[in-house]
Amino acid sequence: MAGHVTERHITRAGQGGDRDVFEYALLRVVPRVERGECINAGVVVYSRARAYVGARTHLDEARLLALDPRADLTGIRAALDAVEKVCAGGDGAGQAAGDDAGRRFRWLIAPRSTVVQPGPVHTGLTTDPAAETERLLDLLVR
Image (tube, rainbow, N blue to C red; front, side, top):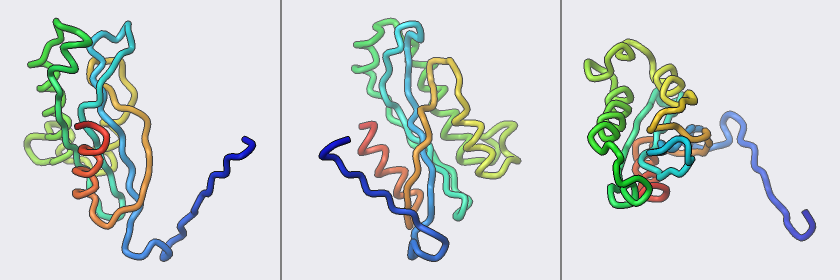
């Protein structure tokens, strides 16, 4: 990699100030799995230190219908809403209601070949995982 230098910073316990490590994955809508085309439709964020798991979604129907004019918008919206409910916990989370935040996150980001699929997991540092969820939605989805 001549001419290209990449710096990596490793943060050890106590060095991140009040920032905590978080993990996130994009939620992608793949209307026709055989074609592999997708649009980003949400983000799932997990912070172990804050026992936080949250998801925010936004479905751009025009972009989706450009990929597949026959896409099942109702079904896709239901799948995205279900992800948000699982993250929120409580009665809306169904069988996942009793699981801790980490277990719910790992279940949501497990690979699957359905119309709504999680992307790879990435990490970062944040002081506010809920605000980070909104920031990532604006940056990567909207």
